Image (cartoon, rainbow over all chains, first blue to last red; front, side, top):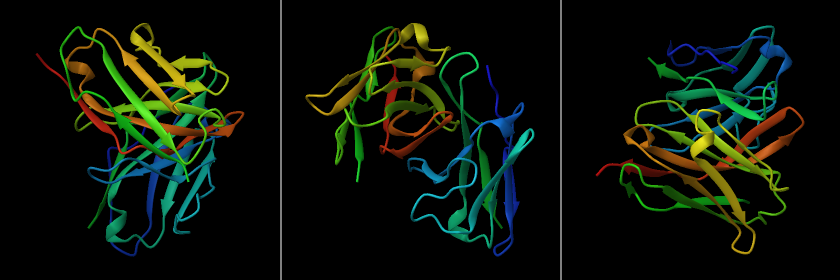
Length: 109
Length: 121
């Protein structure tokens, strides 16, 4: 089965740029989506199809995907960005499978 | 705007069947591309359980496939999850979500608020 690997935690100071990675075998050939989850809340889609943003998501959130690594970039980080972030892909190699990464806790120092 | 709301028992006994329903409002469930169930054990990450397409086709997480059934009730504009032979390891917040995308581009948006199901005697 397809595996997505994320760092458990990333820390960044307010105003700086946070980069959260999502590793997978040839993930660049897949479409990657990112979710933000704050404590006690349901996940919210922040980036879909590698780099597109749903309406209402700030331009500070962006994504890229190439080779074996996809990256969620959060520019000018704010205290309110502190949350867990999950990457997700759809894998059709064995069947129609939705796969989530293990999640990354973003801490704003 | 589509909204989803999970409902069902918050406590299930070991070896019994967990049953949840997701009510969809603001959108016809028969018009949607697909619908899904995702769960999150306390303090852990997200785990996809399964998805059902508007065509009726279903796809399940291989690790749960033998115990999972997802179905749609278009007359009530809702879809359901059944997970049999539950154990304490099935204790989690269960989310339903609307699927979007096309081809290899498949994501979930929006999600329901989630419901905690505890497996205990």
